Image 1 (tube, rainbow, N blue to C red):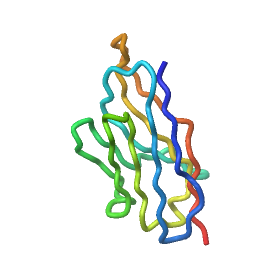
Image 2 (image 1 turned 60 degrees about the vertical axis):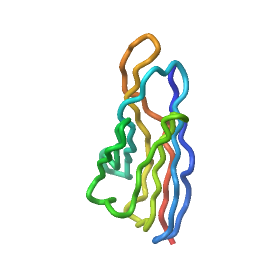
Image 3 (image 1 turned 180 degrees about the horizontal axis):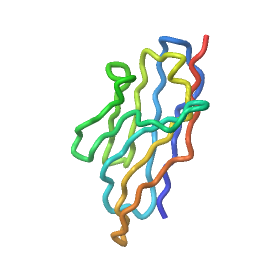
Length: 120
């Protein structure tokens, strides 16, 4: 009933930039918090950044000052602008969203993931 579709991953050189997008679609009534998480090889999933419907943001210390999360509520889309990329940013990136559906069910939904590789 609800889908999150990510795009924008790929290969970047150290110091380079990438922009991830995640669009939510389906029987959506309200989207609360949206966020990005990542899973690096051999590591657990970690929070990258979140943004509430009103705009306040939260970032992992490792990405502060380099990554910017934003959202377009009219398009049900969240973005992650990644600048100053480092090899340690290499991971599978997943978007998530807490969504209240048109039947008033509240769940956290996840995208399928998009690979980001930072290498020279």
